Length: 169
Image 1 (tube, helix red, strand yellow):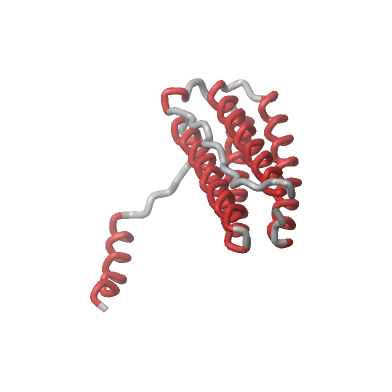
Image 2 (cartoon, rainbow, N blue to C red):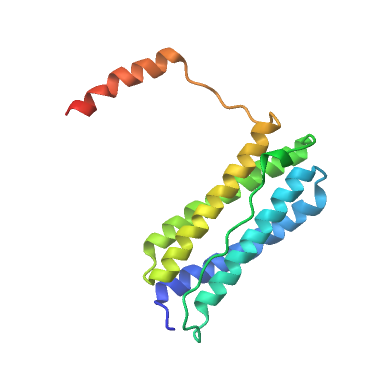
């Protein structure tokens, strides 16, 4: 199957990004002790390897069938155990940021792609990346390792009043 050149170019760029990120996550994996973070890194690496396998299948010029993205494993809440060292907290923040950036990149790339199968797979990869971002975020929350400021009730009320008229226009 001949791909549009734009799809091939985008996937070639993604493949080199995936290679670097997988190698970074493998280095993190061997350096952490927290079992939950270790499992999360394992899931992330496996998910990205699935993305690589799917992109290679999409690129194969002898392919004549539709390519499907395998479902990703999920980190269950009951798996959250132990504490995060400062180093592990930094790795968790980095993993979340990486998943967020890759999710955004896959989504934006899918909007540019021309082949329907390639485009659909990249939307699904984006969803998996965002799911990874959420799992890292859940770990940070469970470990009380992140500060998230909250808006005051008064500020929320002012914002509500300011824009409520939009419903009636």
